Amino acid sequence: MSMYKYINKLWKRPKAHFGTDAWKNWLVELRSRPAFERIEKPTRLDRARALGYKSKQGIFIIRGSVPKGTTKRPKFTGGRRPKRYTRRGTHARSKQSVIEMRASRKYPNAEVLNSYWVGEDGKRVWYEVIMVDRDHPSIKSDRTLSWITTKKNRVARGLTSSGKKARGLVR
Image 1 (cartoon, one colour):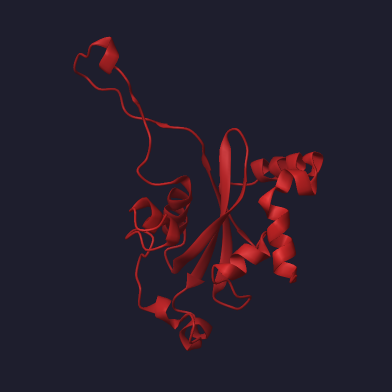
Image 2 (cartoon, one colour; image 1 turned 120 degrees about the horizontal axis):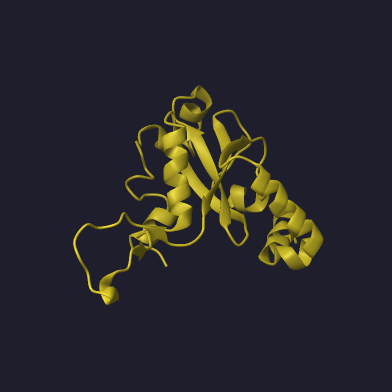
């Protein structure tokens, strides 16, 4: 098996493979970090490479998190009978898609290529987002990535894999 298959096998059941204590320490480390931060290297190299990551200028990784659970809508003003007095709801988008949207807003000069899961606890879920600087010369000259230089705001139009899944195009 190649190195990537071994890494993939480890991340299938991370708590069992890395050990419960190591996994808890990893989550504690993630909790202490800001909601969005740029990181040097991908945590899951196999997944990042499968989704289009290359270690070159113009491509970088953002680790982002969002809280788990439903959203609380604003309180309405009119009267309701108790049965209809619910204010909880869920997004039409997945948490992964929400993180991609927020990352694209935080880095407006870059385009979201894809993202992958890196961890979750009882309160938050973390994804790493692969971002591509569409104006970088090394991206423009790369035959496999130059298509992204003409695309604008792919994530808002639901063109990433999680966005397509939210639109019902992919299972």
